[in-house]
Length: 77
Image 1 (cartoon, helix red, strand yellow):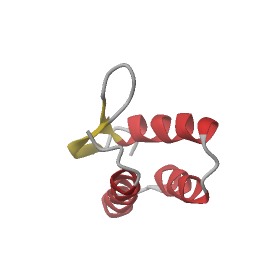
Image 2: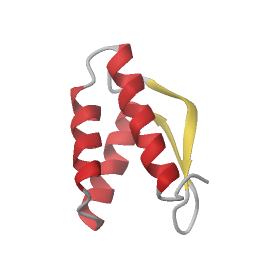
Image 3: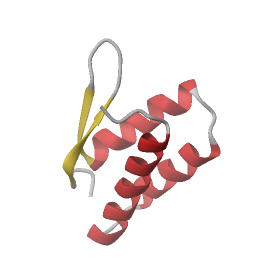
Image 4: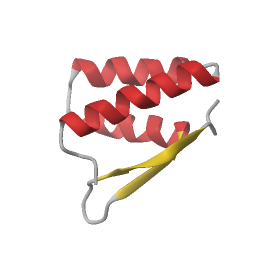
């Protein structure tokens, strides 16, 4: 499921340029990087959901949770 597409892609406000997440694996890598900067329990939960995505339904739900968290943190570009 690592190449499962994120549709529409998530554009994250990042420096120096916005970052576009287009696959489940890119989302996993991004959350890993965020975990090195922040220790939010919700990030750990989303990371586990992304890691555990084994079918389309769980992948969509995990990506949706990430999208919601980023919107709450005003990180959607």
